[in-house]
Length: 218
Image 1: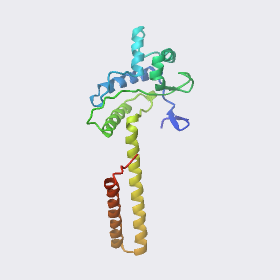
Image 2 (image 1 turned 30 degrees about the horizontal axis):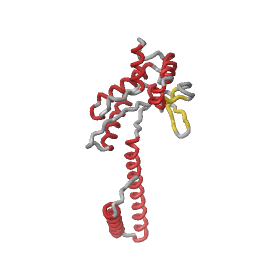
Image 3 (image 1 turned 30 degrees about the vertical axis):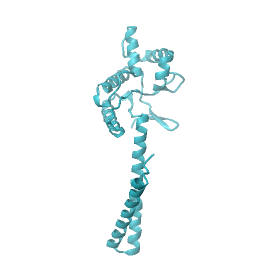
Image 4 (image 1 turned 90 degrees about the horizontal axis):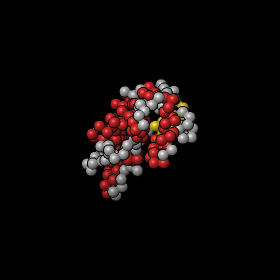
């Protein structure tokens, strides 16, 4: 269990250290690996902040990854550029203003070119596979990567609603079966009654979803 620190409703791993050269290199390799993964359809039109930082170091003949003691200062200088700050200011989180204090999180933001036949569920599954492989080989100070994207929020909500609905339905049916069994003392009769109730619920769901065209979920 990795130690964590709480920021309101968000928990961060204290082992995370973005300034560590190994983590910098791992972030860059992650960005490149995502671009090379064909089924993620990453657009080459935009770059992640770590790719921009690497390009800037090449322009001024500085070795990448940066030394741990130089990283915060270099990124702080990059943030003075209004375009860099506008595009990537929210991708690096610290405990202090700007890039001051301890690093608590970072994100790599990609532009994805989605094909017409790809569903959000399929895309989310591909990203989950990519991130799982990523976490299995991540250095200790890199923390744990998660997926976040506006396009996937609806998928998360639908899955959560479906899961809780099925769980509630199973629990309520189980309680009904138990109550009927206690009153009737007849297993066969209890099963018949529950089967009838389930068929009624299925008919009502069919009428609501098909007859009234009311969508399930958010």
